[in-house]
Image (cartoon, rainbow, N blue to C red; front, side, top):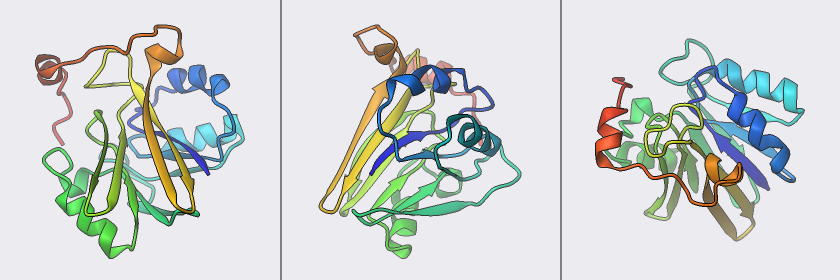
Length: 180
């Protein structure tokens, strides 16, 4: 299965629409929240199934979803209730309780791929309001029975700039406007 993972779109889908024609054979879009209605709009416009959750800026939508794959169960959540800006411990426990092998989450607007106690964690960052780059990012996850591959893709690279944009500690502090 090939999954496009996006999140924190905040009502702005222009970059998603820019990258869509460049993507091949996407089976599912996973939207990690903050503007739940964006996920519904994408499903209508792109004609592909979108699984989504509500974020801290949403008033409706499920808190979490489980995506069944040949690799195993994947937890989809925004992460704001799990203190993901500090560490992944609460999110790890939530994944273990739900018998999930991986977690897709957002909220920080910063991309991340890591593993803890055999659980894979993927945060696509944000195409719209990134905190770790100038141009934004998304993730591509590929699953197979014995495989979970994830990669972060930068908007500027896809759109023709070969060098990924640079962020940095000071830039992340200056762009840190989400106080939830």
